[in-house]
Length: 85
Image: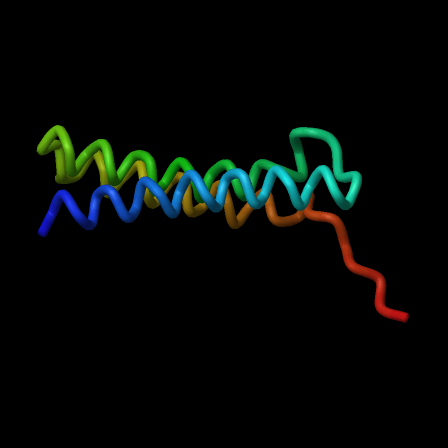
């Protein structure tokens, strides 16, 4: 059961990363600043998946997840603002 969930998370992570890259390319968004929020959120998934695989769950993975979540929230100020017509 655990390996099925790990594979599912890995497939979803790969799909979502390619989707974000494709959407950024289609909309003409460039630069690293606007991608920092997505990068932080993807790193949360990667850190927790690696912590689960290598049996390293604990304060380290929780602390890293919290720090990445706070960084992702902070970097939302660099996201492109959508103009409403």
